[in-house]
Length: 620
Image (cartoon, rainbow, N blue to C red):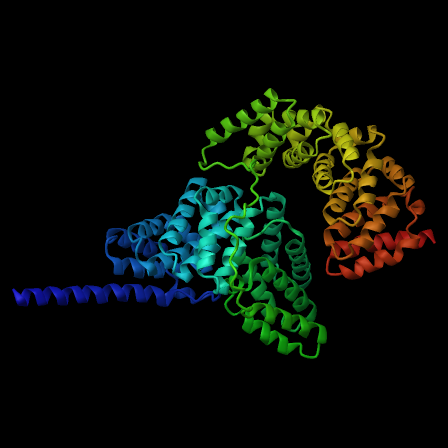
């Protein structure tokens, strides 16, 4: 019997060694974070599928699950395997393991780290139901392992990315006592700067209910274009400037595509080491990202960042300004001083938007029923500003997704929003939410027609006139106007039929010339009206619109988007054979030249600017 027991022990040891060998073999073939690795050693889909099946067959074996979680974590941190892991439903396997081994610190920590690296993809590759389960899993891990710092940091960062990329996830975290748990963890580890950074950034995202699909789409476009054309200097510089603008100006915590952003910046820092102009923009981008995401989060996605910054600083030691920028980045990346020991007041009541709309279930029928309920309530309580503001806010949240635009318009959402705007045009809260909703709805061509059928052009102009001093209303009101006027002959005719149309938009530009968001939307609307129509162009010139355009250009010389729209307005004017000699551009040539110089990397700006200057010289 003793011999049999010894043989069984030896056999178990051999199996254990064999298992370890399997996991070690896989780990050796996974490249380090930020490395491309050897293509010949790539782990195939069949191998990964076999690994997951093996883990599910041995769910009760703590050692196997710990080793498996380490492999999954390493795979999730590698760009090469992240999408493949999603196709194999890795999140479900991971949550099953974490649920079975709730008491194992190492397993839970590795699971949270893996979910952190996968969190940027949840918005696009996971249903609302799956995201809800991931949030529950992360919060459970935080509750059961409060003393484990690495787990808390990973869970907070993952929750932050999920909350920033999907507004409904903020309410899911709140509803599970997530805010109270995060504050408790912060107090428990008040002297750990990484954890304090992670909790503070997460709380900031949860408290900020601002979300714009426009910003999200533009950032996705910039990062994608930066990746595809990283070897083209002119395009790279332009995209880096656009990325800097979005990071500096956006009210939204844009946490999506962190891996892609850092990968593109890493490439540019290596590829354009000797180019002082590119390195200067990159330094400013990094400073903006450190302020938004925090130094520790940034280095989690770019481990060699501090070393690379130091190397590039040595390349430009003779450039005093650039060296100063590199030193600033270095200082910000290094560990800041530990925070003061005073804890946050537990009793502080956080501001929460009671009108924030979210659905825990991703069921289309549920959302459609909800849309009908919202619109029915708006019709029933037509004369209640409180109800109209609250329900418009819900429609605004739903209209962020293009998936529901058709359902909203079919249910009468456009008409209900227009009625709310018409009846309560003097109520600021209603007007703000209604204009914001219309801005989202008018991305759809059919909705544009419905707005026009409801006399929407006149109503929007009237609302803009009533609230011209309110920057928030002007931003979204002019945004809706911009969408209506985009390549729509009917909209432009309706606009010009309203005699005060141009005067109203120019009044907005005049009042908010220093506000970039309002100025951009107002000038963009003007640009859409003037496109290839000399009648409108003459009207614009006679109302001294050219002077206002150059005033905006002077105020926002570094803002490429505003400069581009202003150049489009001027280019439409100089393209007119009859009008070009009377535009009055000669006295503004210095402004045009300065804008061209500031944005010389953008070929379209240079081309339009040259045409404008040529016309200005002909005037003299």
